Amino acid sequence: MDRPDDLKRVLAEEIRAAIAEASPDPGASAGAIDSGTAQARGALRRAAEVLTPAVPEDAPLAPFKRLAIRAARFLWRNQSSFNSLSLAASSEIAEELDRLRAQTLRGLDELGRRSGVQEARLTLAEAAGGSPRDRGAVPAAASPAAGELPPGVYALFEERYRGGSDQIAEGQRFYLSLLKDAPGPILDAGCGRGEFLHLLRSAGEAGSGIESNPVAVEACRSAGLDVELGDAVERIAARPPGSLGAIVAFQVVEHWPPAVTFRFLQGARRALAPGGVLIAETINPDSLRAMRAFYLDPTHVRPVPAETLRFLAEAAGFTDIRVEYRSPVPAAERLEDSTDDGRKLNALLFGPQDYALIARVVA
Image (cartoon, rainbow, N blue to C red; front, side):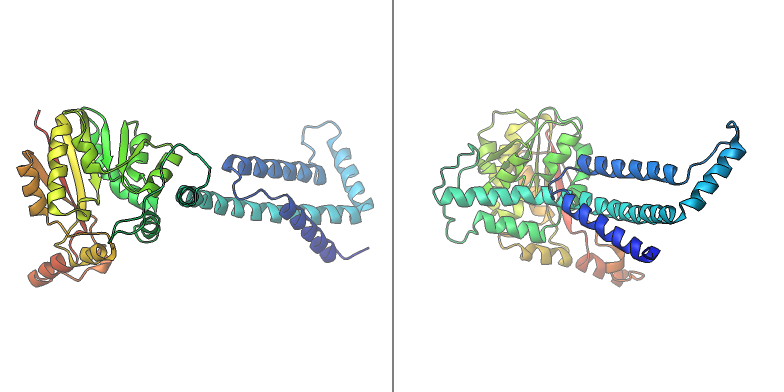
């Protein structure tokens, strides 16, 4: 008879090999993982009940039954030891499966976010190469004009430096309350990867987007979002007057020269219904910390001070306007501001990194 330690080791190796052979592919759904874990746990519970049966106190002839169980264990002690070791090894494997399940669920979210971008890149590459594949969605981008980055390159840049979709969405969640009573559909101008459109859908609000990057458009459409490929300024100018309840533009106006920003504001004022709201979030150039992020993006044209954007909005016809400063620098990364000079220096170096211009159309 092999030693118990050897039996345990051999059994554990065999179980691990069987699990590895039957383990699901990375695309398996969380529901399948949950089902497999539940079945394994149920089998272990049944095995434990068979291995160590319990006799209820009120069972007929309970003392004799307990005596019979002890006698059986003595007669079959080697088999019982093997069974116990088997059950212990299986329990260890089950614990490892629970840990792997948690890791898999975390990974599925990240894979889902990246798969749209990867699929869009593949679509564009095949279209550019004359592939007969017909998705009926986003056409391949033409060669970029001089001074412009290819759409796929900028999609990669955003993926690496802008932050994860969950992080972006959490920062944008604040704006949902401002749009609760919007008198019409909500348009996201320059919607990018669609983080805010996902938030709107979760909140039960009607929302659509316009985006000039075909890679981002394909990723959004693959996620079931209503996104139009095109220039936001031109498309908003073509909307019927008063046809929108709200327009949002997150981190967009810094990509435009002042004349384009003004045309955008004029078109938004015309397209918004009475009571409608415009939200334009951009980098706060009064914060030196924020300006580093501004110059990190190679497609930014110029920073837009809050006073400038307010003036342009007023010139475009908005009257009810306020500025909301957002994204404060964590206190641990700021200087001590126990003095007036310290507070002034903090405001200059580590002021809020973003601000939002919020303009309403007076009903």
